Image (tube, rainbow, N blue to C red):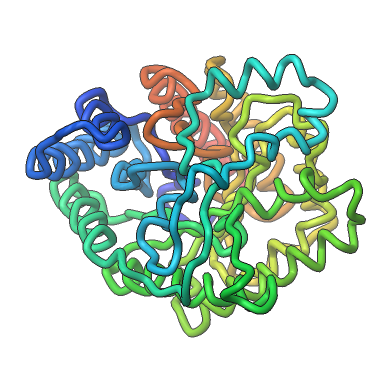
Length: 391
């Protein structure tokens, strides 16, 4: 193993929001009065606290918890773009009903979706009203400052900010402004490049989140075909690479998952059917959900698929979607078997997805979130020791 410290640990980014921050965000969401200065100071201190706690837990590469995103992990960017509006009358409450899971388990889904507390603005209802341009510089640089302050106070050098991919800017009506689906995808990519470049210019690592790339398969197929889906996905991969052109690949991470929903996942696209698309993305590391019981068996594909030269695999070795805390020995086992295929020097330990889909949707209890991260750290240390002894 080339890394003196062994297998480094990280996660996907989103962490359960602390009560004080969530209370203010709830008032903002509900149109109730709140103090802007109090919000900004609460946000800043919350980020500093969560960076310190990640460091104390043993996480090597930490995030701001995505605390600066006031709504859903993907839809946050819609509020940082001019040329788009949210209109409640355009919401499509049947959208998730098109998935295989929703068709197979309608009674479960009817109850489950009501219990999740997903923000309406994260569920659709957006329309393009004019050419897109980025207007979120103030929020973006605030997020960068808060994370940087947290890193400095915790004495941590490895920090990343998660941002959305073009494919995951989804559910938006663009017709009337853009002439084609591809034109809209590339317009989104040009806007997102502002966030990508600013994060890298600040010396941080950029993580591009793209849950919608795999999940859209379940919404399209059937009636669409695999070829139809791959054509749709290829446009989005090309658009993302357009946004990343000329940027420092070594500090870019690309994350896919099959959605943070604690649902059956019967309609998920197999990893083998999209891994070539994923590896086209010009990123230095790939974070891929691999602890999910519908996908854990797919670790074997790395016996056939070659990780591109100089790239790193960051598999999910703990799950965000269950309150069961993985045993460190299981974490170590997941890492060791992958190390045999891709090499320990090309491996880091990560999570399947974020522990919170947004400010108001926690997938596990906050205390269990930290227990899971501690288990990941301990498991990575076990695996590192064994792999070093065997080398």
